[in-house]
Image 1 (cartoon, rainbow, N blue to C red):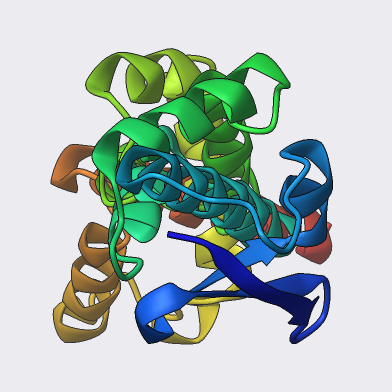
Image 2: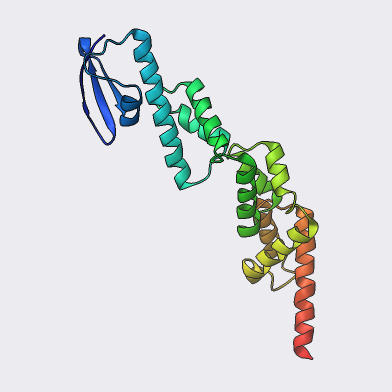
Length: 218
């Protein structure tokens, strides 16, 4: 099938008009690297090869576009690329391999970043942080490795005391107000902390508050 015309389309794309009113769109780099010219006679296999090259280029460019906005796990990016019209799994996998080789996709590094965001910044409990990370396509191994440094009693207690002091102090004026205390407990359970972790932290909070009041009276 002969190439009847080659002319610029949108951006860096070129429209390749073939016989039988067929058209394919290729990036300028592909047109140049494949030495395409008007009058070339393309076999069915050659056309399929050019279409595969076009999809590979689009796939890689789209992945880079997504990664400019935020980090992605391997699985997240796979699902995004496979959702593209006429996606070819073999090419998607090749694209992901290339991105991993260049360091654009790194699940272990992404897990460390998310662990820091969810636990150190947002002060989620380990359970909720792990849940959020699972929904971003990370493996259990990467999640556990990333959360290991935060899954320590001292770090958990520190986060809880910060939350109690900054977010829930208005509910904790009276240790005998069981309804208010239960409300705080329920809120912290939703943030991924265990009941025992919360009870210990509330006890520490009241002990510190009482000590502070005594010092203020002296």
